[in-house]
Image 1 (cartoon, rainbow, N blue to C red):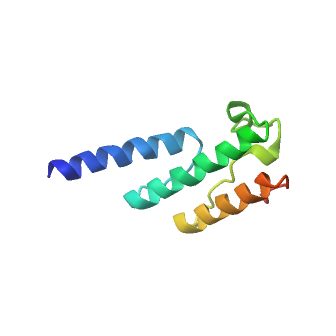
Image 2: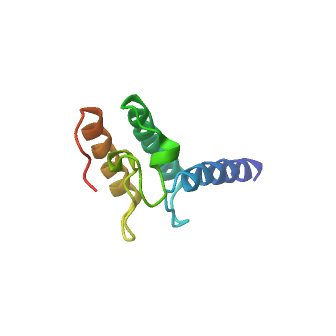
Amino acid sequence: MEENRERAGVVAELAAKLRRRGVELTGKETSDEVGDLLDAVENWESVVERQGGDLYVDEGGDEPDNPDFVLPKRRADERVGQYISRIEEATEVLRHGGHPPR
């Protein structure tokens, strides 16, 4: 019982980190999905920073400094695995100097 409570606390903390980064969650994501999604987002952020992007300025607001550095938004009907794949694809494009699809 205590282990389940601890696990739920960790998942809630990870979900809060994702929400602060503008990631929409449904609340139906598994703990593994939340962890994998956070990994994908952190990889994205790492590449943005290596490319000279400013996460604070480029994530959010109406007019980002560089739209290529804005994390792709999750679609309303998109499963977590699909969203992670889109983030990973965009990360690879950006890593190689391209323009990620929107």
